Length: 113
Image 1: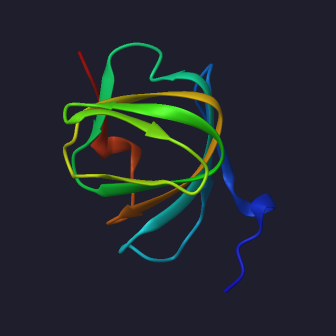
Image 2 (image 1 turned 90 degrees about the vertical axis):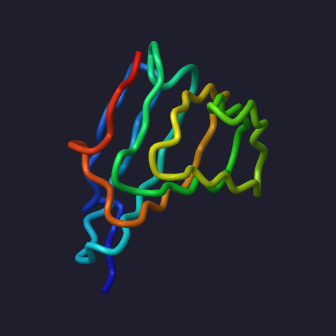
């Protein structure tokens, strides 16, 4: 099955974060790309209540600010978020691949604080 970028759904998560969510027929995982140039979310922190999430950096750099510490991201790095991990991200032209398992949904993605 081929999924073209033109089939992706563009989501403006904030003024500094744009996501392209790719429609995928599985409930086991989901795939997206994101560009973060600034802070996401704009304030506070976020968490995924039902899914684990993996970031893979394809360009740029940034920092994950997690309840587990601060982690610098560079090209080729992978960061794994545990289900329920509370975090925020700052990026400088940070382009990432996001894989979530099970499939990501906006209803389970919550802002905290």
